Length: 107
Image (cartoon, rainbow, N blue to C red; front, side, top):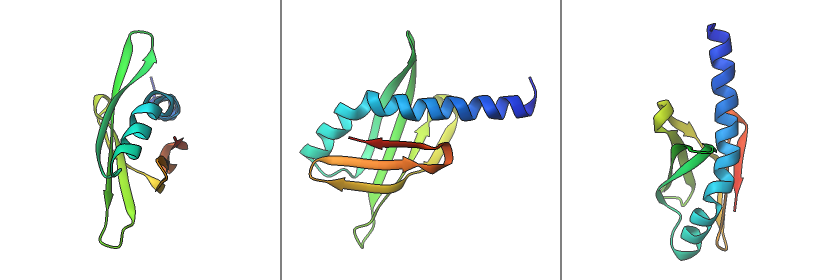
């Protein structure tokens, strides 16, 4: 397989991960956001295909000015530190995007 094909496959897999992952963790993150501050490390498993699960980790922090920032990791794929953008936590809901793979989450 050529390097171009591998990059294309990785990009497609990461896009799929973020989109499916959003559905998988909607309950977990929404409940956590309602129950406490959204800041922290959130781990879950994405079911990519039946019987195939992929661990994902979201890291969210708040700076001294109150602005949220964060990253997404996919440890099994050795992907770490994908930056989150447009992070919003209001009234028990959380939203963010992952620009590098064209994904987003809202829940």
